[in-house]
Image (cartoon, rainbow, N blue to C red; front, side, top):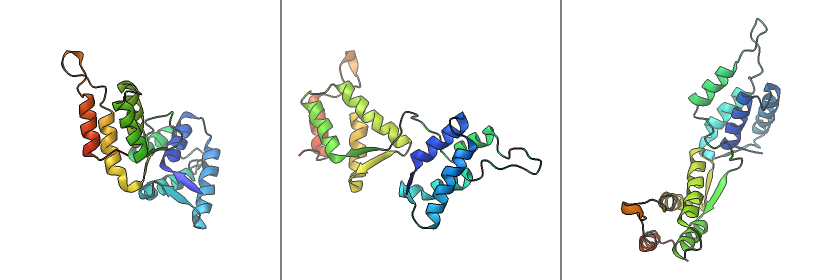
Amino acid sequence: MEVTLLEIKHLLADLISGKKTRAEVVDWANERQVANNIRNLQYDPADEEGKIWKAILYFTKVNAFDNTGNEKYKNNDFIKFQQDNCLVLYNTNLKYPIVVTIDDIKQAFDDLICERKTREEIYEWASERMWAEDDRALKFIPPDEEDRIWKALKYLASTDAEGDEEKYFYSIDDFIDFRNKLKLYY
């Protein structure tokens, strides 16, 4: 069973908004706790395992009551947990991690240079992936190309930038030079 940081963020947002009940969240967390106990739980991204596990353990207690019979956790407690643990969901429309490959980057440069897509379309495409990274929901394929892919995404997200006199800041030749600098050709 896999659990993603994005899934954690959505579950917490749904708990806060009331889209999920406390009981649903506890059931979800208990299933993952059982999977972890039998070593059948995988974390994505793997380097966020501690944060994900902490959230799962927190979720198992959200339906707890104090010794007076009142709910132990209030909505403000969930919001505080969300903020304290950097679990705010920035892009609420994002349901699944977005994959970006080195070939996607090469294709984006080719589409831009050959004018098969507009600068604005390339900007939107690259920006969506950058926003996904804000939610730790961007997967780089292959992983060892993450640095090169990220540099290219940042550059592609500026393709519609305007300079003086409402002319674009970057020319087609600039795109070609950058692509060649990063060796992003077939």
